[in-house]
Length: 85
Image 1: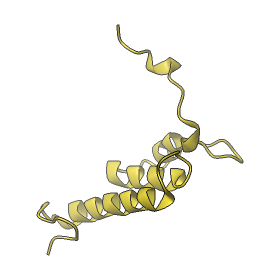
Image 2: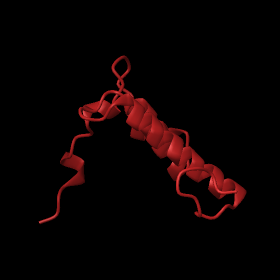
Image 3: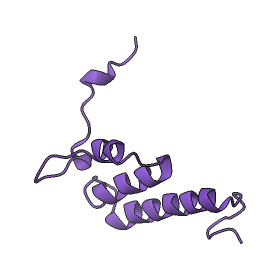
Image 4: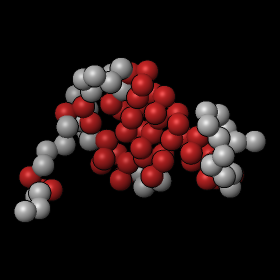
């Protein structure tokens, strides 16, 4: 039986405390690309998800921004840790 996605609540670490904006809605509203949207989501949750230190989420965001730059500059995925030359 499939899971009803409408009944699945978004994790609290993706929702802001003051205004209650969700990362998904921010990404959707700004019409961000996959990589930029994923980076923003990681930055918004940095330090909030149990078991994920802020540094880990920030590094994941940086990785996705590098992926986006690679796409923009037409670089292939030939790197193992840094930007492809």
